Amino acid sequence: MKKLITMMLTLTMVFSLAACGNSDNSGDSSGDTADSQAESQDSQEEDSSDASDADSDLANVKDKGTLVVGITEFEPMDYKDESGEWIGFDADMAKAFAESLGVEVEFVEIDWDNKIMELDGKTIDCVWNGMTLTSEVTSAMECSKAYCNNAQIVIVPSDVADKYQDKDSLKDLTFAVEAGSAGEEQVSGLELEYTAVKAQSDALMEVASGTSDAAVIDSLMAAAMVGEGTGYADLTYTVGLNSEEYGVGFRKGSDLAAALNDFFAESYGDGSMMEIAEKYGVDAAIVEQS
Image (cartoon, rainbow, N blue to C red):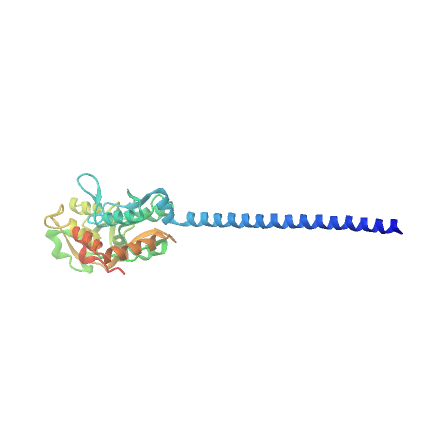
């Protein structure tokens, strides 16, 4: 009997130890699983953060330390001074915006007709060059709020200006316009004969040389470059074809557009935007920012 009891006690202890061993192993396994899940969650959060940064143009600009601005030569918005530095209302505003982000600005001359391609190819971060907010632009780019009023106007030699005072009088003229510009859109819509050139300044040269009868350019550019006291004293502007607004374009979905809107509101509020506008004679065209 004693032997039977001893055997039963021995078996009970063996099973008890086995159970404890299984319980301990189970506890270790739970700990390992929890640690593994925590590491996995941390990894997912890091991956999500990396993906978010990769999708953020603002973060990328700050990371590389440069805001690359696509422009053409367009006085009074973007043009070079005697030392070769880019100046103008848009150029100075772009410099101030870059400074607010803690980065440098780099200006790159682009083919205006390829501005959307340049953006999508990430060779530039934005298009900031007196760009009219046309339906093509707003559908293909993430645009800032309008910051400046403008119009497309007809440029002709001063000695024949009295002949061209309305749209009907323009039908027999040959025009020069910047390729991909609002000016091209206007003459095309009126079914006028035209030649597309690289820049608005080239369109003026076409008229001055007699290669084209007329040009269509931005009113702000005309005020700075055409008429008495300018390089094109023998040219003048006549017919206004439309009214429009300027904006800055970024890649579709870019968070830089919202950052620029905030900067516009701040710079308008503290007077620095108007100070720059007065420097280049465009203060009457500035759109109130809020």
